[in-house]
Length: 240
Image (spheres, rainbow, N blue to C red):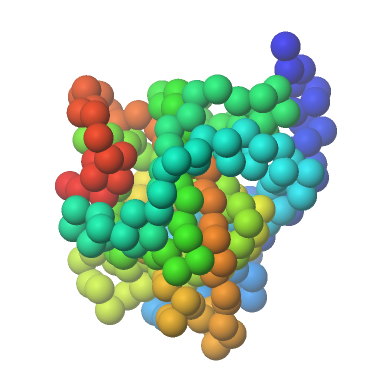
């Protein structure tokens, strides 16, 4: 059994870079991982879109990859998603992890979810090829609740979040390699999110080369749980 003391020691190893309302009265996150194109959305956005740099170490990243990489055997990247929402990807839901990876995922869940959240037991792993990207979408409320938490492995990327009610209002988030993002509540429901392709992958004017990127994603259950049909996970997660 993994002791809580071990989990607490591990939690001290990462740095919170964008937690404003929850952890600090200072709302100026612009200097770190946010780039707001419309400053008036900053307060709500930084409350509901949190980023933890260096959430996992290089050694921990390798533990996760050791569990993930064998799962791709004979599974090719897809470039023909049903609605063209995602290009150059493959995916799996994984429920069997090594002890080392289980400790990491337990720490992720303790960081991302409250005691009131019912969590999906399966972990969604999404592998984007060097030239892969994800178009703007909101994860379906039929299959996901108020919290989405994702670890970024192998490569940095730029995530853009755009307000549904006014698409001229958007902000960019730099997801560094080995960082954790937590998208919840207002941002999760009211903003679309996307991973920018390399031709538009810029953060504050700097080009961010996205190479192959693996995201390890945990989600809370929707308020009303329905049976998920078999088939493409992103078919469910990207459709409303």
